[in-house]
Image (cartoon, rainbow, N blue to C red):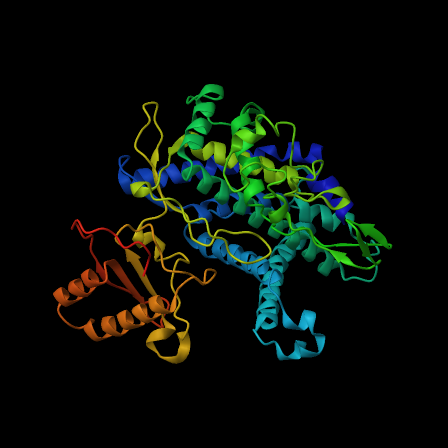
Length: 506
């Protein structure tokens, strides 16, 4: 199946033939974004856009057209299906990266202590349902003879090539659906992850953002849209993508390998059958290899590391793995990342409100997705520079992300089934989230008192709530009730007094 996939979908010849799909989808997405901006802002002002969803839609449509001949607009009736597909594959990656007790202690597997196995089964059924629908549609079309040879997608090819082939005892539908599933999951999620990290890094390093846009203006100009043939000229953009893959590889852990014979490695005797998992994230931040390893410095790939690529030939940089098990979708991932970023940055100006940095915390899972959402307010880029695009960071936007403080006593009371979000006056400090347990007992006690006070004062006069916020130097208090859809903003107010902001968040 790997050879078939490589020849029919990922080979150099096939990849070039599918170039029009990639370019047309990026251009269509930009046009839809522009049209929405015109309709909502009248051609002047900004438009709020969630970039995780936008990048996800672009990648999903490209890979679905290649594999299943499908395209979803992300609007109207299609939006629900798009979000369903994105959600189920994002859940797939999250669950794949979880630690399951039964894997380490098999006799405890039946307990399913964290409910992970139940979630995995539910997700597997949903993925199977989605791909089964596509497979059935293709079979009906194939029988009717409506598909022309030039219009065949990957499922059509598999239906033709694998018909009557011995699949080592595996069911035909199972093999086909599993192949399509892993291709869609790998192509959409990991590529979207890289795009989001790259954009976030550029927003936190404005000098690099300006260099990318200056490079686009020099080599492409503003009279036409960038295309794939321009990518080789955009050396600084390529350096930005390499640096993004170094700092935030889509897969922080490499795929497992197994030793086939006894050997000695680094002074350690390793038995045959031992599994080996490479810590790519640690390797990419090794100070013995990289100077200032935690800093975003695309220039390193223009001088000292200019000959280094990400295709598995340099063991210091392995975001796609290496050897025989090198990621087969490396060409797709790199081309889509470069093309989508270049197209977006050529068309729009982007910035963060009040120069607040984008939150760079990541989720836990098989792929390295950003924790918080990345919403932008966009404006068309003009020859004079235009108006800026605002991306991420405002207090109200963060409500809908993951930057929420979850009380440790969480589920013991009805009120505490919800979460409380508190922002300090600067809006740049946040209370700890699920992946960051730095909150002290004093802070927990303070927030617990705040929760009680807020609950008592919800029905009382507005001035009392303002006084409470002022007392604790808080601008925004948001209460989420047990009903996830019920979001009550108790108070949004910007204090204008001259008192200094607290040195640490509540």
